[in-house]
Image (cartoon, rainbow, N blue to C red; front, side, top):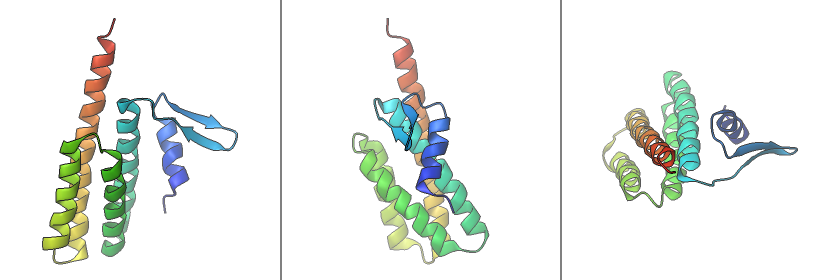
Length: 135
């Protein structure tokens, strides 16, 4: 499986300027919307990849719970983005109310994660463009 330390390690090797390696592991400082959006996007990518492995191995319940947990955490971390909170909460509620089995639940939450990652990438691009225009 994918451990939290592996996700943080992968995120800190990416282009997140605020991640640094310390003697005891990785220390990530959220100093901007860009670094948070990048960290969330990278983390959701790792979750999506691991969930796809589980799903393709026929472990639909495990993939569903992995996606569900990741979205619960992400929901709390995007508190300043009502648009993303709505997409995540709506996706989670829709799956619980209408998806008849774990296979469909996992597939639908995979789609929600893809949508959220696309929005996070847009946030990063907009924030970077805004920072580059500053004098």
